[in-house]
Structures are given as structure tokens and as C-alpha cells.
Amino acid sequence: MIDLYYWTTPNGHKITMFLEEVGLPYTLVPINIGTGDQFKPEFLKISPNNRIPAIVDREPAEGGEPISVFESGAILLYLAEKTGKLIPANIRDRAEVLQWLFWQMGGLGPMAGQNHHFTQYAPEKIPYAINRYVNETGRLYAVLNKRLSDREFIAGAYSIADIAAYPWIVPYEKQNQKIEDFPHLQRWFEAIKARPATIRAYEKAEAFKDQVISPDQARDLLFNQSADTVKR
Image (cartoon, rainbow, N blue to C red; front, side, top):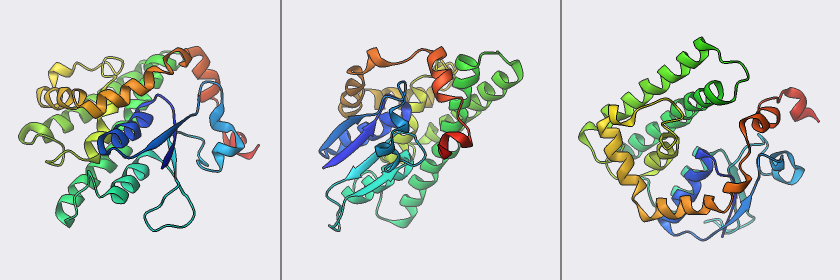
């Protein structure tokens, strides 16, 4: 059984998508980042970076004590290896999946996140910052669009690379992107959106939709952290 410490963010959706796709039993443990659950000591023992998602695997493949994992990319890789699903066994295809998983973790997610911050949350609209991150998000969309021009999914077969990227494309309108400008990406996006596991994963988030906070609330709680936040 997997305990999934979760909230309704793109990174949270990655893990519900995977778990629904492979049929691995799990329990949702809501961590309401709008009320500060991520700073509670019991959560920090699992996720020292005070970010969701995180998991506790109570039945590790090798037995023994439960294993906790934080960071969404690490969780996807851990679960793929645990189940032997959505990651290739052979070294060449596995390398394809891993490089695109890390592309999302190091590029698409952080750049889209900064896009969201400066276009929606920042108290002052700074044109340079907005243009910087909107343009970089568009560049990354174009990279993915080009990659998908001759294959159904990012690494050929559906994998954790697709699961990692998809939730960060869902809010494309908020990122000031026109998905129709990226036809291969749009075809891929619609195919994943229609998967039964994706539908089930996003239905899980509906239970928490009334608890999502406003940009003003988010600004005060989520974006005013410093070294002192960790020290206290």
C-alpha cells in the first residue's frame, strides 16, 4: 500500500496519474498547502523540502521498513521500478524516458512555475519577467511539439515521461500559450486527457476544489519563505 501525500498541483497529479494507470493501491493523505499543512513536523519527516507530493511505501519490493520518497520525479521513477511498468527495461529506451523525465523536472516544470508566478501571483506586473517566462514556456512547448512530430508519445511508448509532462501542459491558457500553435503537442495532450486513468486521477482532485486558495492567500503563505522558514 502506498500513502500519497497530495495536493491538487501539477506535481500532485503526476502521482495519481501513475497510480491509477498501473492500478497500484494507495491512500490519499491531503496536504493542504493553502493552510500550511506542508510545514507540519510530521510531514517534514517525509518531505524535508516542505513540498508535495511525497509517498510512503509500506510494502517495499525488498521488504523491511517502509520507504519514504519526496520529489515527484523521484517518486515516478521509484514507482516505475517497483512495478516494472511505464519504464523500459532495456538501456537505450530507458535512457530516452529518463532524459525527458529530467527535462520536465529541470525545465518545463520550473519555467512554467515561474510563468504562473509572475503572470498570476506577483503583486507587481513586471514586463521583463513575464516576457521571459512566457517566452521560455513557449520554447519548451515547441521542443516537445517537435519531439512528438514522429512518435505517439515522448519516448515512443507511454511512460513516466508523458505522465511528468502532461499536468504542466493542462494550464496552458494560464501560461499564455495557444495549444493549437503546437499541433503535435495538442494531439498528444488530447490523447492523454482521454485516458481512463487520467480521468480518474483528475476526478480525485475534485474533492478538494473548494479548498483551493486565492492568489492573494497563496502569495502570503507560499512565496514568502526564506532560510528562516527552514530553521524554525
